Image 1: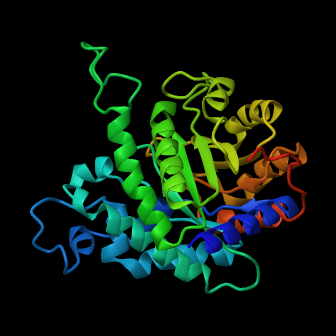
Image 2: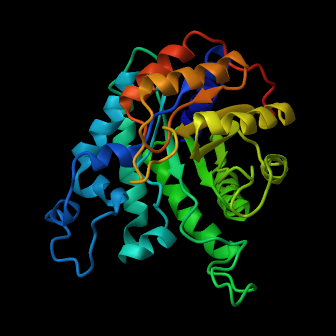
Length: 337
């Protein structure tokens, strides 16, 4: 496996120097278009499962694989260079909500395998699969109980063990890189990065790693209270392909924080913002054309190496983002890896 992984790494490093790479858009937004019901999530395999499964989008990799493949295919057709696996909640911690901890390896392996198969359908340019590693639904830095501020719902070691299983399965399934994303608590992310480094060392392989944090509101901080600069300092000791931000904010609101990031690092910078801010019904109204013009401002200011979309974005958004990205050169940086 070692020569293959090194080949992938050198290829994405080569491509990111030549052009702005385009990441895909939202997986959940696309899967929700199918209006899947409980029986769709169950399929035949889980029709007798004793707990509700509706809402477990990661499970659709096993029960509705063609729907997941089609999402990947549409994003590649729209111009994406990188698609993310359908594994945002794919840890034992995340799957505990559905009593499906035992399926974690299979979910991640099959998600990576499916994305890899679709990527291999496209031969016009290099296409990459990023293993999506979400933040879990617990935080290691803060107590969920206001009456007991010292309590923690999860420990660093719990997170490391959970992330390690996910990482191994994503690599085994054929991912080209790993994306630790939507980071609201950097301690959670550090557990994921620690697990990745353990696996890399034990397997004697190198696989590119992207890190993407989340600025939660106009305070300019993550949920656990870190500024842009503090977040960067906390993770930049790890060899990284890129660092960036995604989710919570639209492209307009995210720009000032990307500027601060660009001012403080030589790493490649990524961004995949939401399609604006959600309306009163939790829906995203920003059109592809509106988002394209906001992304154009990123590119004019030389901020970006990897650009895509998060909540509310669709292949239509990614198509216009890819078109404008092709008009600009990537941010020039010396990647410290």
